[in-house]
Amino acid sequence: MEKVEKIKISALQMSSLVGKVHKNYDKVQKILSDELENDVDLLVLPEVWTVGWSCEDFIDSAEDSGQSETVKFLSDIARSYNITILGGSFIEKSVDGKYYNTCPVINRKGALVASYSKMHLYSYGGCEEGRYITVGKEPVLVNIEGINIGLTICYDIRFPEIFRAYRKAGADLLVNMAAWGLKKPIPWETLTRARAIENQTYMVAVTQSGLIKDDEWNIGHSRVFDFTGETVAEIKDQKEGLMTCEINFNDMYLYRNSYTILNDIRENYEVKAL
Image (cartoon, rainbow, N blue to C red):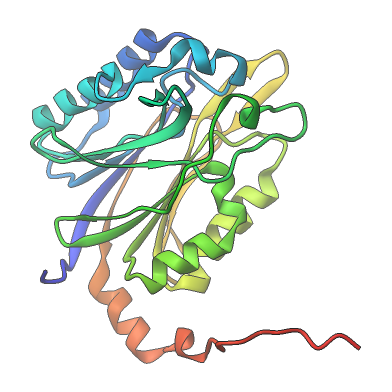
């Protein structure tokens, strides 16, 4: 397939209401109605935007594979706006009775064309995602209208191996859809930027904002980085809304041809312990 030079991307940052799926649908609809620009090609949503980051509410909000209300909701949006959607994630109940933190990928015609289930589950500091959710089986590189996109969710960002695997498989764009905690600002900025730099790839890092419960908050401050780590779009702090930018892949391909850094990777990094 011929390489696409440019696409226009919007990423949606929102403060999800815990356990209030339909109110979160309404919030997405309003943000898109108020802010979505013309000719956007790709829309990216954050992790578990349907139910908020509340692990104990995950099972009650789960949707059966093949009968997902969230997928239908996003399909209607895709058709209405003629836009491809990386749907953040929702809690999916599979046919084998297991639960997954799953990102649906929906094309402009509203068809579900791929899905990715989170491969690394965060179960530290009082979070118990691994208690409720089953790990995904494999990375998913999806081709959207000529662009190869590597999908990851939140805690996946701490594992550079999955991002390097995407790059080796031909990724043009890396995406991390998160519900990242406010108390961890340095890892959020550093790791998302590093994944772009080390793989010479555009990176969309979109997270929820706002209060989760008690004194727990999402960090907000979603960003798009270019292949050198420069910020090309952002939503600062806790604001709800869209960040939109045009990505020029031709610039990235030219840069890769001039700085063939990945060719310097050694086949073997066996450590000599003394």
